[in-house]
Amino acid sequence: MTRTTSRVLIVLALALGALSFAATSSAHDGHHDGHHGDKKQSKHGKNHNHGNTFRYSTSLTSPDSGCDGHIWANDTIKRTYSVKKNNDGSYRLTAFDRGAFTTVAGVSPQGCPTVDNPHHGTAVTAGITGKFGGFLTENITGGTFNPNATCAAVCDRAAFVAAFFGPTAQQNLDKNVKYLYVFMSKDPSLKYHVWLDRGNAGETGGLKTVDRGDIATA
Image (cartoon, rainbow, N blue to C red; front, side, top):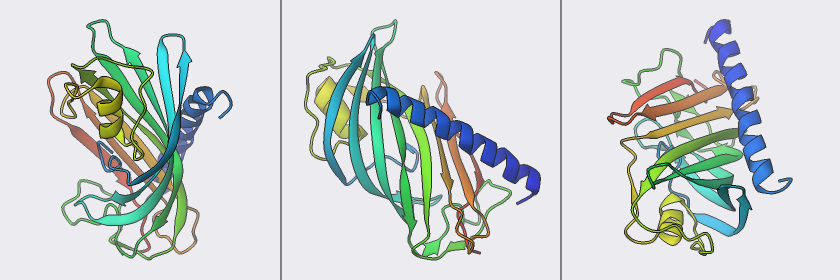
């Protein structure tokens, strides 16, 4: 990775960290689907109303998958869901995440030979720790929003939508979706210390992804 690329990733990471922290702080009154969607465990959440925006906070753990679906790390996440009504009657759901990861030995998150990423590694060793922050935002159509609902014990996005919008609600991750996650580690054994994972799909659909860097020892 060139120095210029490294500096750009670090600036983006710091900006994203500040944004994610500010969002979760306001949600707690002081406190990728990409590769980061299906969480396996969670603690009970809390509901908060801030003007026209509803927020719900929870804690989750999950394996994290890389460029070809392989598991490269395990994540511990603090997540805040933000819900705001759109002018057309649909709702905008955003999940703000921040947390920590521990690597699993194997292929690095961007280690696929066909990946469209000019600066990446191939492998990562086990037990490397780091931090990450990010968000995924999408439109929810159908259903009826109930701010007094209770989420399931495992409150991933699918569970949140089912609980708060009902069984007729629909997620469409092919249109009107954006996500951005940045992973960072200072571990000296790493060759690549920062991975940026970003995707965007407009009203006409077609998810476009941009990945830069990696978390890799080789």
